[in-house]
Image (tube, rainbow, N blue to C red):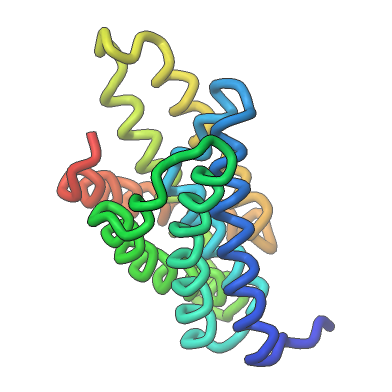
Length: 207
């Protein structure tokens, strides 16, 4: 049975993981071809990273929430620092309002999906809802892509982007579930959560 990480290890993992997430995300977008490279622009992928952090923490919802939130917040400046070092972007973007906004989103997403990661290993209904949440956010982002189908500015790209996100959502359910019954229940729970997530994306201005 795996021992649980101590608070010091959780804090260190949050800081280093956030730095790694931001840097790798920028490099992923810059150097990998479309459509795989476009996953670097996915906020849902960052939510899944917070979920994985919570799964690693295993127990302690508060530790998972704080650690995942810290990781996502740190990932934002890490992304822009990497952009400045690699392609000479302006350093002032580090304290731009958009960067601060993304950090605020990081706090919310980190807390929610970090706890979801802990729930994925908890008994009862939480073991169903935990994996359903990261799958739902991927499905919700797929919904955004589906809305873009037929837009002359996007061509056929949204179809591939949507299919990739749906496939990743199903993969998350397959890996996080312990039994086929849990996976099926999590899929059922993920569908209405995805609709709620799509509505949240639209309200937040994502188009």
